Length: 351
Image (tube, rainbow, N blue to C red; front, top):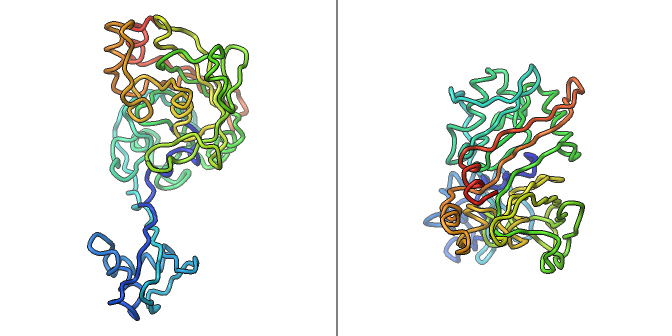
């Protein structure tokens, strides 16, 4: 999930998929809230909860219009649509969690996030996040920057991706950084270890729509959307989706092309962009539990192959982050060393 916040996993905490509820004959003429609570039983919302959902605009009538009157009488056989919103995230609390700070001033902070840390609280992960740590490190003033649930956060990287991330400490800086990300005027380069060795010499890869050769590697332009059947995944789509461009440069190849080290540069920042594009090319990240599941190492890799198969996360590291400081105009550029687990795997693969 590596990109601007408005393109990142904001759907991850989305409510349940819309439900179609048919009014049973026994409830003909009943109030809307009572009828829909009955139609959704036993696992559906209670009548009081349904009333609140209706008044909040979460219910659409048979004609496609939003209905907010919970007392409206219904007819047997009518089909109503309920779109429950996501649970409201708890207000983040400051926690004394150590941070690796690459840069900090009165306007912003750049941190090197470890793999395993969630960027901001969400249902099921309310503590131990980067936001909790930032609130403690930066003080209570951060809590009003950019929204209560995600204070200071302008972009994010996936929980199991390590590396650099910038957060704002003032509203003006938050707006300035958001504008830079929206204009794709931020340098973001990732170190990656993938299965196989994607390159322009592959006729199969070059035959994919949106893939082209460029000096030193590949340019992948393929729109990304939520997977049609699995809401936790993203996928390349031919129709709709969000414009996504990744530049891939191969900088090392393991035995017989069994694996490769890549430098991946984001031109856009969509949810899971690098992971999705590499999987679409047929060369998923080593360790990717979502897009590289079940990938087995060739025997030619020997013990290194076993290490690659056992790697517990996607082998992706946000190594470089560069941007112009929104307040001072200074050009800033940071590089983060690869974490020990990533470096050890790369060494085992001869990369």
